[in-house]
Amino acid sequence: MGFLDKIRSGLKKTKDNLIKNIETVVIGYAEIDDDFLEELEMVLLSGDLGVKTTDYLMRRIRRGVTEGIIHNTDEVMPFMQKTVAEMLAENESDVKEIHHPEVYLVVGVNGVGKTTTIGKLASRFGKDGKKVLLAAADTFRAAASEQLTIWAERTGADIVKHAEGADPAAVAFDAVTAAKARGADVVLIDTAGRLQTKVNLMEELAKISRVVKKVIPDAPHQTILILDATTGQNAVSQAKSFGEIVPLTGVILTKLDGTAKGGVVLSVHEELHVPVQWIGLGEREEDLQKFNAADFAKALFETDENNLKVSTKI
Image (cartoon, rainbow, N blue to C red; front, side, top):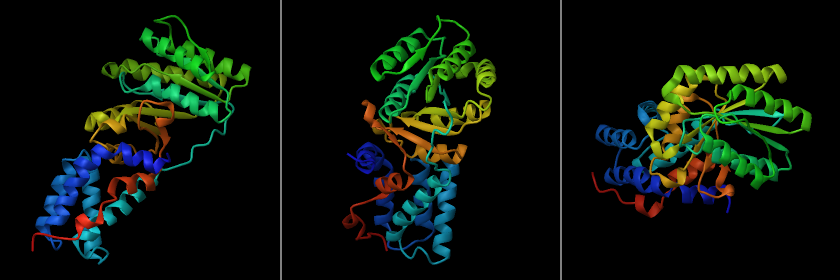
C-alpha cells in the first residue's frame, strides 16, 4: 500500500468530520456570498485548523473569488486542496543524511509515542542499509530505556544507556563518541519530555547539545519534535513551547489514523514553519510514513464529485 492509500485510510476520521462539514456548506449554497464564507469559516475553526490557518485559508479563498479564480462553490474544495498542498510544501524537504554520523535530537512530551517512533525510525534507517545507534537519554523514566533496548534488539541497532537518573548529557556524549568509533551512520537521541518543568528541560536539552558538539561540532544536525495528532490544538501549544526551547528542524505527527483532528497538521506547520517529515498511520513499523504534502492534500480534500453537483440554497 502506497503513501496515498495509507493516508486516505488514516484520514478517514478527519474526512468524516471536517471535510464532510465543508461539503455540507458547499452543497448548501449555489453561489459564493458573505453567508457562505462566514459558514465556511466557522467550519474550519471548529475543525482543529486553528485561528492562524483558518485566517490564511479564508484570505486565500476571498482573494481567489475577487481575482476570478473561484467562480462558484463547487470550485472551493479543489482550490483549498491546491492551497493546502502549496502551504505544506513551502518547507517540505527531502531530508538526507549528509553527515557521518547524522545526529538526531528527538524531543516531545511523555506519552506522544516518542520512544516508539524512534524505534520505527531505527527500523526504517536499518532497512535502508544504515548503521543506527540509539541513545537512551530519557533517564527520568526507567521504562523509556527498557523500551528503547527492546527496539534496539528488534532492529539490530546499537544502544548506549546509563542507569536510571543518570545525566542525560553524559548518555548523549557517550553515544556520539561510540557512534564515531563504531562508524554509525545515524544517532537517534531519546530525551525526557517533562514540559511542565520548562526551564529544567530547556537547560537539559541545551546541555545535551553542548556536549554533543564537543564530539561533533555541528551536531545535533536534526532536532525533531514528536506530536500526538489526537490531542488537536494541544499539540499546537506543545509545538509552540518546544519551538521556544530548541531550534526545531522537523516534526513527526503520530496517531494520525486514530483521530478526527488531522487538520492539526496544518496548524502545526503554520505555527512552526518547519516541515512535517513523517506521520504515524498505525501501530506497525511500516505505518510510519514519509510525509508528502501533495498526497496529503489530495487525500484530505478529494470528494465524491456526485455529492457536490446539487446545491440546495439559492
